Length: 277
Image 1 (cartoon, rainbow, N blue to C red):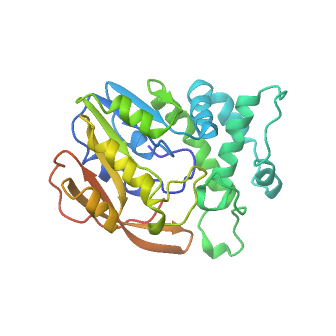
Image 2 (spheres, rainbow, N blue to C red):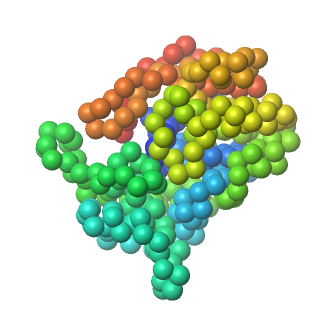
């Protein structure tokens, strides 16, 4: 299944390819949850935990899991409107009669109606040229809403964390039957800056590598090629997947790289690039 929202850096088009390469595990952990594209694409494990430092994003996932019908209803009633998108960036008042639900709805608006699928303030996503898309923006939004029920059911037995990723890596990485799928904000030199909680510096990625090196758990790390990562993970197993990134008619070919401290299943070299759904 696919996520009920757009998200910058999500692995929707290659999620199943990544899932097919994951080592065996009993407890699946994502320290950087984002869109949960990989979790939603894989079969449930005996234990599963997802984490993100962004409290608003984790509120969305928690409300979706606990109150799927309510969230689906309010999102379905939300129009594709510039004013709705603009208002979604304003804080929800503390005295709002259903504040948590409204926070979740505004997160969904920002991601679904904003450009680039980011929680940072962006422009409103709309079409002018009818040749630019086979589906209207309200049609896209309906499609996201229609994914909510299945996603909520999938999340029913998933534990939700909201703390720094390195804390989660240290806590869960000590167990050999755990698999950490680590998809951090990529190195700043390899992509645009579109996360609210950035991780663009060499020092931050070097610190991440130190924590991952100490893990007894299986680790699969996603990223783009860089000299820094080639050095930090020079002794790790590596696999490349051809893909594409972008929106609308603006696509560019990229190569997703997976590094792992465990052997990855044999595959047929580079995968074929696919268009985003």
